[in-house]
Figure 1: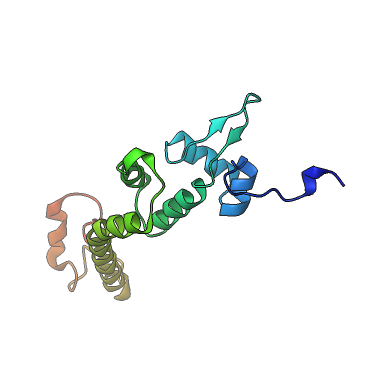
Figure 2: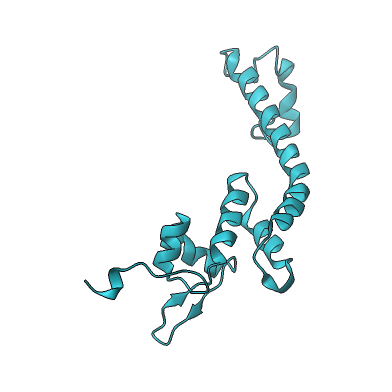
Length: 154
């Protein structure tokens, strides 16, 4: 049995892109994308292979959680760039950033609830014709606002 099959200790050691993908659950292609977007960083070995510091795992968790709640990558990058010396986010960093994002998320939830309610009300009557709907669009008054959907537009 060669030494390559034995697990290597991680403390203080850099990780390969495959190890980062395995430990984080993030596809290698996504890791490359995140690196191109400046969200994570690696160094290159003399053989041009990527090596990541272990802290990248926490950074990836931060990115994925923020994405999951709908924070755009540009805002995530901005938040990460705001950290001193490009450090890995701490629990306090997450609490601070998530508090800043909370009002935006609350607003997005409100807009989505309104969209859901409008969508249900529009389709729920069964007519599917806003120009004839006496409940949602009497006398086609929404046509004065221009072409395209009016009730479901953000």
